[in-house]
Structures are given as C-alpha cells and as structure tokens.
Image (cartoon, rainbow, N blue to C red):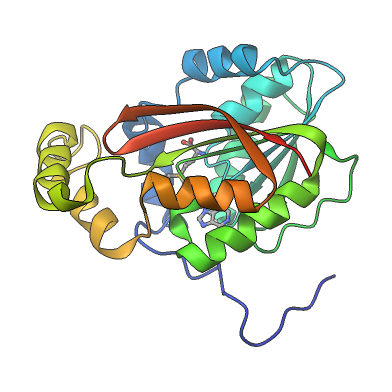
Length: 235
Ligand SMILES: C[S@@+](CC[C@H](N)C(=O)[O-])C[C@H]1O[C@@H](n2cnc3c(N)ncnc32)[C@H](O)[C@@H]1O
C-alpha cells in the first residue's frame, strides 16, 4: 500500500454533492441523463472498446459505463472514492448478470493500477472534483496507467465560453439546465457546483492534457459548459 506525504490532497473529502449519501446515490441514475445504458453503449462502440482491452473508469459512479464496457467483453476496473456508489454499482452489475468488473474504492490520486497497462481510461463528470493543481497530478497518474498510444476519454463540466462573459454564461447554464426538485439537477445543485467544485476553462484543461503527455485528437465543446476530449498517450 502506498503512503502519501502529509501535504497530499485528501480526496475522501469530496467537494460539492456528497456521493456517500445513499439518497444522492439512489437518485443519481434519474438525474444523470448523460449516462444512460444506451449512451454509454454508444460511447463504448465509438471508442472501439472490446474483448481483449483493459479499460479503467475513474469516478465510475453507479457503473453504467463500466457495465456496458464489460458487456462488450473488456476487462474493466471501476474506481470510485465513494463506498456507497461502489456498493450501488456492484449491486446494479450483479442484477444485470455482469460479474467480471473489478471495483476499487480509490480515487484519481490514490488508485494503484496493478493489472496490465490499460488500453483506455475513461473519466466522465468527475475530474472537476479536484482543484487544478491536483487535476494535473491526476492526469499524470492517468498517463502512467495507460499503454503507449493508449486512449484517454475525458468529459466534464469544462468552460469554453469567452472569459469576459462568465457571469451571463453561468447564469444561462443554470437557467437552461436546471430541473424542478425531484426531476433532475436543481438550480441549487448547479449553484453549488460553480461555487464549491472546481470546473475550469477548456484552455487550462487542454494545456494540462498536453503537459501530461497526451495528444488531443478530438475536442468537442458540446455546450459552452461541457466538453469532451479523446486523447492519445504519446510519451
Ligand atoms: C457526477 S459523478 C459521475 C459518475 C459517472 N462517471 C457518470 O458519468 O455519470 C462523480 C463521481 O466521482 C466520484 N468521486 C468523487 N471524488 C473522486 C475522486 N477523488 N476520485 C474518484 N472518484 C471520485 C463520486 O463519488 C461520484 O461517483
């Protein structure tokens, strides 16, 4: 087991929504409309993940992507810092007859990959939980888990609006994305995200990806507040 210096980030103290809270975990799949089985299956196919591949999902949440990658025949490691999320994801996988996913309670900054170097690392809606310095450390660690030419898929709340328009851009995002209580992420959830979590600008994320040894082969600004990247490990 690795021991970390006293100055190391404590990722068990999660910013924003508390994903150890069972109520949050149970409500998650209804709120997270970006992660349905159909959308995750399409992503698995788009990335070309199949049998013989090793894939790591960091911040795996309720396991929807991990289950679809496993159904496609890949060897999958699903990593999450929340014990409640992991327990829920394990139960969901079992119900679907998927028994081969390796679940690990760990995080971006603590997971030790002791299997074959991975062909794919996927991380969706999770990296923003870390402040920028620690995002960079996480990306270096991700690069070390991948084979040469391995693929990183990153999707997150990432800001591509003009910097000077931050106020109107954030207000528009919250107004147009929030849902009434019980139907999805609420105004309060979005407000907390901006206030307490660590989503940052696309140009910062892109510089970090390159400095971690990745070539960005695809950058899609899905909305002014959401981006996805497909990257190849070059170094
Ligand atoms: C918004 S959910 C996203 C889940 C899933 N990837 C998706 O696309 O729906 C963020 C997940 O990251 C997990 N998490 C929080 N901090 C983490 C960390 N430092 N390392 C890994 N996972 C973390 C949370 O427990 C939660 O399950």
